[in-house]
Length: 212
Image 1 (cartoon, rainbow, N blue to C red):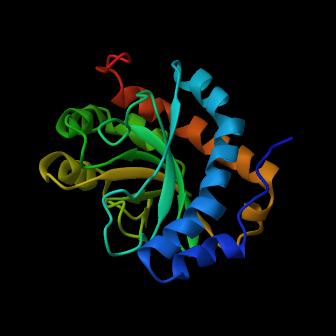
Image 2 (image 1 turned 45 degrees about the horizontal axis):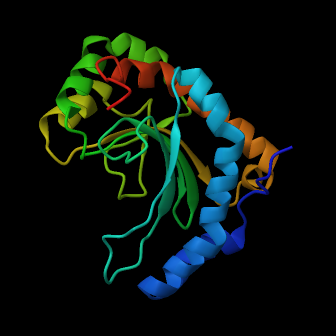
């Protein structure tokens, strides 16, 4: 039985709290404990699936001095010290949806190499992304495009060539979806999503030394 009891309306309403300190207090009290509960249920399975130990990181939003965050997230990465410079998985939320990502964000030092790995084997990438998955090119924005509508080659070329470009693959779940209120079903959904994305994660990690 999962320790996670789902996401509810009050969790999403945290993002309507005015003020940086006040909203951060809401995130710390309501959402971050749920991220930790989710990790307790999935991290062992994820580590086994990818073939090495994964570590939980919970977004601190430490760089923010004035504006409160519009979203928050948890990340799963092979590196204990940080995740932004590495391929990683995410579970997080905006005020209107939950996202589950395999994330390659702009801090990655080897963006172009990873993009080329995907571009060189584009058929395998397409085969590993189901039609109901979405792709984001900027983790700061809510919007994402369906795998069916996006030009995957152009998206990966942009990710490779534009310094601030990003590439995130996964699923969105609307805040009103009953799935979010059922802890067990949501955990299964996250695990299913991560397992589906694991082949792409492994492709991106080919040249990594896990000790780094």
